[in-house]
Length: 430
Image (cartoon, rainbow, N blue to C red; front, side, top):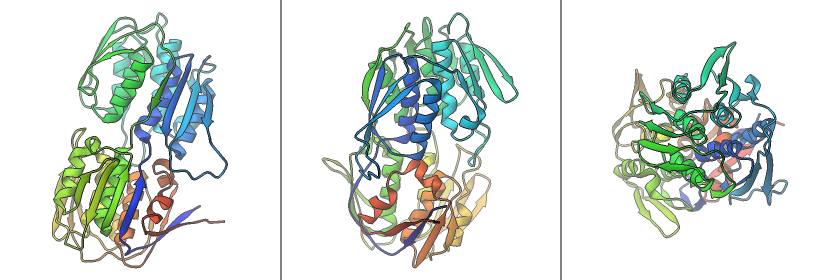
């Protein structure tokens, strides 16, 4: 099993190309099941989750081609994927697949809408909480689907097709919004989704669906109006930049000091997070090609944050910001309101010398003058990259194990950071 070795203390200086957003790429890939024509997706990130989902979609009958992919290629420019699901050959998503990637549960909506039936394994829990699928299922019921849960599988059917309806989510859910939206575009009549998630990735998927012929009004708002179509067409769509990767590298520069331009991204995708980062003393400016992050040797100021659905502070940047606050000049407070188990990185940051105490959904971080390298273990995707940030700022060597979590969501992380002066390398267990 690979590990990542980091010797901290180097400032970051240079340019980092931001990849396409994983959180948009996955539902966009699943949207290919809605049409028999080709869906071309540009700016696709080369990630373990993307490659796994491509295999899962092939199981349902989607052909998959990649432009310009060469063995051993380490390009930082996004790839172009082509998906053609001319015939759906299997409407079952087995446990062996869904258990490996929670987002694969979202095939339920397209399969049910196009084929009028689906059998999809419940995804179960994960490292950051249970994240139940009740909102997905109640949404499908509002569209006239018959839903049963038998032996760990969701059995969904709509013999006469889905019917437009009113879906009101009692709380904001990105996954349920994706799933029900994709189902509604092929339902008969109008569907209204209220209290829909407003994350930029939702809007990106909706815009792609419109290119495919869907009729959607209210994109980027909390109320979506969808007029169902009998069928959708092929389309060409470019995945929006990854705001979580953008924020992660911005926080890394704030932690180490230096001057880095993040290329191919947009500050408007994460205004709240960048506003909070600026409060710590980082200098953030928009450039012609992206965002520039600078921090000199001045002390980092502590901040208090609370995770919220978009446009609030993103839960996917909570661990990274906490890593930064471990070396701030004072006491910071982080409250996690989205997932109930998302402090698993805390004990590993403590191994680097951080002073963090937990009470329920709140972490109190007392900044220390210096972190120190240690052996640490990644527990989930965002937690793993928080350890990278801590290690970059620490004195001495840090060895991070279980880095397959990083490969799920960060494309060419070692190359991007080493290109800006970090002393970082992947160590194979072979």
